[in-house]
Length: 137
Image 1 (tube, rainbow, N blue to C red):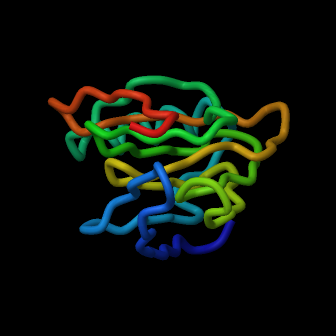
Image 2: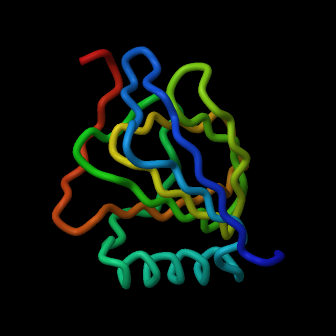
């Protein structure tokens, strides 16, 4: 892996997916290195230090959804995937072990495909309870 890089971008509302008109999606590349467990633990520590207690280790759902009540941090611990951000026909993004994403509340996301070992650490800001919205309100 190389030096950490980042990019941020805004996503406009997309049908029933509101996205977030105030805050950008942030994607960090090459944040952590190591094997799956080392990377997962490193993301959990990093998120926790910044007030985002780690909540789960799993994959990203394969259907379009968003969280209306919480921002979400995703740290990719293993494998790679193509995610679609912003709802149907949204922005496709390749992610791999060591990458992290910060998705503001309302940001649509889903996994299009991934390797079998794809594993993500998920975290939310302390005090925010997440929900799952996956149809028009």
